[in-house]
Length: 403
Image 1 (cartoon, helix red, strand yellow):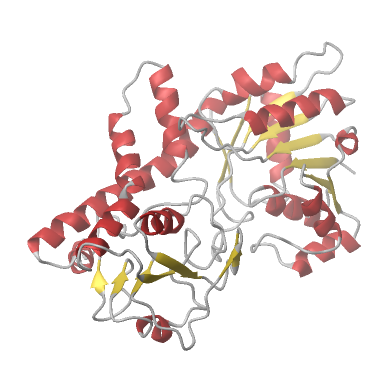
Image 2 (cartoon, rainbow, N blue to C red; image 1 turned 60 degrees about the vertical axis):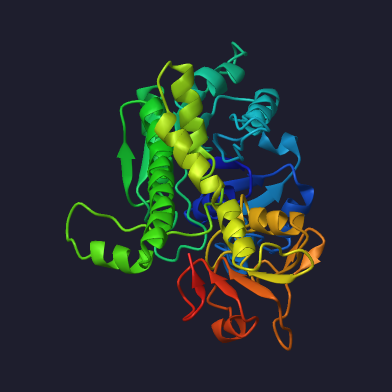
């Protein structure tokens, strides 16, 4: 039985691990966080897209186990790297998690393996960064491939199995083995000519979203100056059956992909001597949305919110998921608190963040309310009754102040 190791048991790695285990592979889910691996071995999933039932089924079948011990990686024949690729303090790519994973594999792997990178990064990462780190031994020759993740947390329609998957190996043998691996649990595999094409495609997919979200956020300010509803204008434009794709305005963008991937693309473009001004402007527009909304709230409430009790509904970055990575709601809360406001947040899916807990809306009145993100488990009636001034970023509450 082929032994597979998935490095990283987060939103990307755990679904891949469980899918591979269900298809018959013997899977090791490796993560440096021992609390995560301990809980996984007890049958407790920390990822909303993986149920405890699914996890327990592969545990009981002895097709999956989790570990934080690097020694357990030694006999792996296929290794998938699915670790975070964030931005550093200067908004440049931070490949430290990939580097750490590669250094661990270089020490531990006892024989040749297929190394597949799913972590999002700029073109050339597989060939020029990962391969050299794992090619220092003359006795062990690995195969290298890329298959960039396309995970949308909370999406019930598209998952690991049915989302089209790009892949490419540095060699034909690597490509063939990569296809053979994923074909056991992915229905639509698309080979591209080089790893760089796959890496660039992933970055462009999310840059496309970033740019269009920035455009519609800017457009919302323009329509407001005209005294017309941005959402009505968008609905009208959507009646065109070709050449238009609808994006909705909001508080900003969050998650790992949209706030991060365009910066990876801009970084790589600049290294190659190309301009990325449009991408960088889109990043700036979306990152500044929480501040623009805070400015509106302050102006519309007498020029000061100091001492006012404000409720922000929705702490996660998107609907129906507890994922708070890069959440614009957190940026808004920090700005409002910086203006002297007393800010509470309500998010039943997140429940607890750092040392704070979600606020119960029963029998509580606030000076101001912001509807930032809506989950199906939220009560819109309670939210609409929570204060006399409600700023609605989503267009869901009648008579609220709209974006």
